[in-house]
Structure formats: C-alpha cells, structure tokens
Image 1 (cartoon, rainbow over the protein chains, first blue to last red):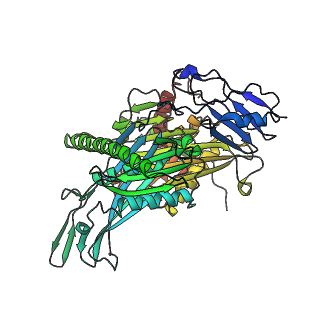
Image 2: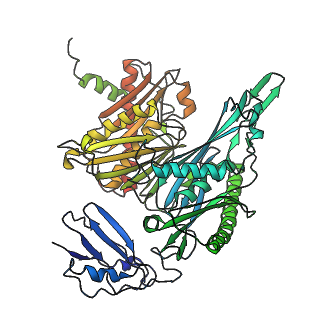
Length: 395
Length: 220
C-alpha cells in the first residue's frame, strides 16, 4: 500500500522563478511510508522532500543527491524517472527565496517603559523589563542583580509545553545570560542603592509569541532593546533614609548601558558547505549545526557558541564573524532608530499604546472609538430580571 | 430599586486584529483602551490519553502574565475563561481531541478578564471552531459613591468598592460566567447585569464588523 502523492505547485501565489513550490497539504498516512514529491518542472532548484513515517513528517532538503531514491524504487513501484538534482549554489536558493540576509525586522514598543516587541520575519517575541528593590548577593554587595527569563509560550509552537523546562528553553536561557550578563553590558554598580542592603534587581522576561525560526536572535534583540528603553524609578538617599519616587513625582531614569550585544545565528548544511544566516523554522529542522556569535557594534565578540556537532574550519568561523559584524551594525542602527522614533512620539505627547500600533489598512484589524452605552431602559431591564427570575428553592 | 446615575457608562476605545500569528490555528489580539491581550488557539489536535474525554474535546486554557510565572490568580482566571468557552463551544463535535487556548497579557490597565474573554472569542472565531454562540466579557466597577462604571481602568478599579466581570452570550444575552470581588447589594448586582447586557450589544456589533459579517442580523 505504498502511495505516491504528487502535490500541486503553489506557484500561483508565488513568483514562479524564485519561490519554490510549497506543500499545500500533507496526508498523514498511518499505513506505510509514502513519498511526497513536488513536480519536476518547478523552476526553483531547491525542492523539499517529505516522507511520512507512521507519525511524523520529516522534511528533507534536497541539497543532498537524490540518487539514494533509485535504490528505493522497489518500495515505490509507481515512481518513475526520479531525476537527480545537484545541490544548487544559487544565492537566493533557500526555501523562502531569501539571499544571505536577515528577514524583515520590525521593532515596536508598548505603553510602559521597558516593553518591546520584535518581529523577525514571522517570528514574534515580546520582552518586558521590570525592577524591584532586593537585598544583594553576599559575594557582591555593591552590585545590582540582573535576572533573565525566556518563556517558550505554548502559543509559539504546538511543541512547547507549559511548565516543562525543555532542552531548548535551557539552551536559550543560558545563551541569553552569557550574551547579556557575562559581557557586562549593563553597569550593575549603578544599580546599588544602599551597599549590602538594597540594590535594584532588573528582571527581563522574554515571551516567545510565534516560532518561525531563530528564536535566539529575536530574543537578544528584544532583550537589549527593552533594556535600552526601560526607565527605573529615581531614588534619593539622605543619610539613613531612602526615598523611592514614583514616576509621577520624578522622571524615571534609564539604565546605564555600555554596549549592545546582539546575537547572529548561522546554520550549516552538508557538513559546513552551505551557510545561511537567520534560519527560518523549516531550515532549522534540517540543518546540520548552528553557530551563534554575539557581537556589539564595536566588533567585539561577546559570546560564541557552536552546537550540533559540526566541524568548522578556522576560515569559516572568521567569515561568519565578518558577516556577523556587518549584520550587527545594521541591527544596532535599526534599534537606535526605533528608540528615537519612540522617544519623539512620547515627547509629542501622543498616546503610544497598542491601540495606535494596530495597522489601519489591514482587513484583519478593526478599531472602534470610545463610545457611551445607552442606559435608557436599564431600570426596566433590571426590573425584568427580578420579576422574571424564579424564586430560589426553599432550603 | 435604586436607580444608578447614568453618567459615565462608556466603553473605552476598542481594537482587534485577527490572524496575526502564523503558527497557531487561530489568533487574535484584543485591545480595550490600554489593556491588551493576545490569544492563540491550537486545535482540534491530538490529546494525551490521560486527559482525553471519550465524547468531547478537552479544552485547556493557559494565561501567561507579563512578568513572572503564572500563579494562583492566573489559575482562577483560567477557570473562568474555560467555563465560558466550554459553555459556548460545540465540544462534542471533536471527541478525543484537545483544544488549547493560550492568552498572553500584553498590558494590564484594568478590565483584564473581560479583555481576555473577548480576545479568546475572537481567536476561537479565527480558528474556525464550531460554537453555539459568541461570548463577550464586560467588567463593571461600583465606586464609593455607588456609580456604576463600565470597562474601568486600573486606577478606577483600585478606587472601586466592588468589581464584577460578566461573560454574556450573543444569542439571548444571558450571563455565562460571573466573577466578582468586593461587596455590593443584590440590586446593584442586577443593575450591573443589565448594564453589561447593554454594553455587550456594542461589543457584538464590533465582532460582526470586524469579521465582515455586518449584514447578518442578530436573531432576536
């Protein structure tokens, strides 16, 4: 009962030459393995192969030679004429037709200070910074405390479960801590209020809202932007008395940030032959290994981590770091612009809430102005409720 | 019967956006003034054997606060939202499946539970799940003078003597769920229910407009 399913090309919605065909529907066959092939005539040189294996759908990239299929024709008697596709070195050859570039990054801010949304393509991440006065660590009585928490919300992907510390969550948390805390990008000594007794604890919560690949980069951009955006309450010390002013009494003050480390992820395919910056979710599933370089705009590497067990040559790592420095300077510029725009908007006194950030022209969005509720017949209604209600049972 | 003053019964500015996330089957973001909640729905999907129900779908609601981990307050809000959804979803159409509704608080400036209910309803609509009726959430606060305020801000909630949230259904405007805090008389409760029913008409009109179904008449 082996079946061959050929899926139609979705090129009507994509540009025929550049966008590869997409899988429009996958049938999960619980009976036996099946091969799903996209038609040979698609113009794109990269075609995705999917095989169903009882429960899972495995997406394979055709960078590999397809000749192995010839050995499998006995399993697929209806397949004929599988041509071998050579791996393509086309620049814009990846699944969504991108060159070696980042997807579109969009940074927006929320109503209160320290709330930031980052859209990296379709990956969506929210960061919120908050602060609290606590007792300092005994080993460092003069320094404030930075606390990072990345939440893989079950909204981001059906694979994320609430409350379970999955491997990915531990890995992302650790990487973000190394990138931001160990690089000492924030001046923690300025967070000290009373040495040995009270210091500020800055807490950064990053929530993943939609997982379409490269959560690490989106999280690092969101975290550092939120930290730059955040304002902490002003504090006055007079002898033994410490007064914390609310935002209405005195303007809150920003954190002192030395530099902005931003992480750039590279994914490798075919034992390091092919390299892609900012992998999307499908690409992440089929990659061989991942290299993460956190760098600031002064070309200082803050953290570098390679995972997946690929062996990289020295010049590959050097090349990646050069690409990373270019990307980091672009992203830092983008963050600077976003912060400037937000500052201007707040100074102009306009409302910078979410209601303003809803795009007006989209068909999926709608806004309604503040409106009064008519109260003409409320008394009659309330009377109605009493009269029509059944009496409670006698107990 | 006390007659409440009809002065400041108004709803704040509303905004809604649907289908804004690519992974969840349905997603919606609902904004009331400055309060904003993002909802995502997955389902019907595979369910764990320990949680499956033989003739209905299993609905799970998760509310994620903005700062910190979910605590008991989020659990009680989840229960309110879950009971409302179970009353209006046609769960028997998807036996032995799971429906997961995740609500993320983006900003809390009062009326959080009703904003969460509204976002949940819009996300369930966006996911195309079969429902017997739509529902909406309305929050009423009674301040120290006895005035009823609908859709209060966080500052108004703090000053209020009582705070009530009702979930109202769209077909007969009955109360599906109520969650109250503070002390109030029975008459005040009835007044608030009546006010919430009037306010819900506006919200349902907003739902219809945003789904583009403005030509469908409300069956009366």
